[in-house]
Length: 158
Image 1 (spheres, helix red, strand yellow):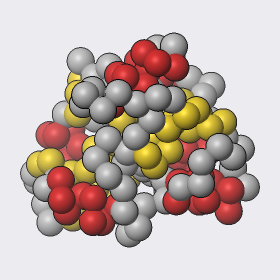
Image 2 (image 1 turned 135 degrees about the vertical axis):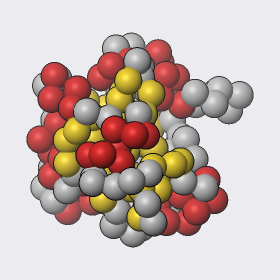
Image 3 (image 1 turned 90 degrees about the vertical axis):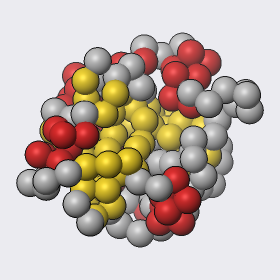
């Protein structure tokens, strides 16, 4: 394990095999997921970003490919909710224990409902934040679903 983060600790404790991919993060780049795809030489469709949202009154983790955008209406619908909005960034950091740009869907400080876009099932492995800017982990979609206790849904759009 290259870096010890709550995400990698959680994966280790679950006995999940993953590959650590640290890379040099450019502090001037705010498009963290696309940066990871570019630096690691991976198709953007295979790299997933973690977005913290509010569905009605509940904080929810939405995980979508960096090549697309989150469809908030589809997210609310996937959970039987009425309305979804992006979570306040400061609240997201407090609830997850991670900094913006390094929020992992795995090993968050508090457990949240998690929905991962259905395109996750198109790949043998996918990449998500490992819990720090400049650090992704690669794992199978099945292991990502197990580590996050997530549901799969059509929540991304181009």
